[in-house]
Length: 323
Image 1 (cartoon, rainbow, N blue to C red):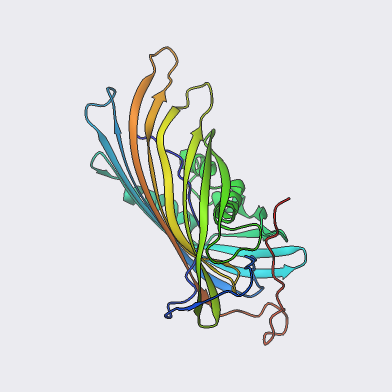
Image 2: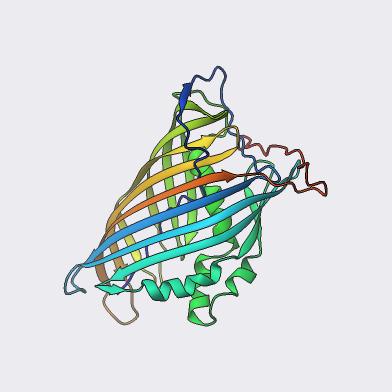
């Protein structure tokens, strides 16, 4: 018996360099401006490890699940001007392992997910740094085997999910006004997943600025708590959450203009009520831990104009205060 619970994924983060850091003091308030310069290429690796235990009278013994996933992808800036930025996102590799009651489902999952390797989508950022459009998802999903596998993938891999993934990262971490080292700010993000809505309120702190090979790196710490709002009726599980919190660290490359690393740990405990027509509702307890990391390394920029020796001069896409 398997139940999937919404996880607030933090994706698309990066480490710009491995050089030793020297602490720098910011003399003026810092503005976090998102930039995807044309020709800029970055390689990303994201991992997520999930462990969860279910228990209750419906199970003869506690059921433990473990899932590990890693995803490699490449970002390439296609254009950047006053109308926004367009980024080509290529999925370079995906690996997923899963155990359920002693059964290893990894081989079957890898065969299914192999269809995504090499697929590309175009992601468009507005001038205020939000993703408003994702193209190419339908063609990517069509690569998966038809039938139940493809139908399941469509629920979790679609334009809205990719768009939300970017916007939640920005909304979870970044301030909407200039800040100084030592300042804190609150953020609120939400995402609908499988008819439920996940809401997270966080506090973020700018703990310092480092200098690395000419780049200014903002160091962030965050912690927050969340809640899950399920549908009122139907056969979908109804949840009562006793604990839902997360914390972690992140870095934002102020020179490059994007989140350059993130480490997150999330804990959730609660109860699930399974509603089945004609049967008495069944309650199960869940205890879940999620650990997620993202890193991104910069590659050499490529020229995108007809003159291969000159790349178009990029214009930054600034994250303006919300109105």
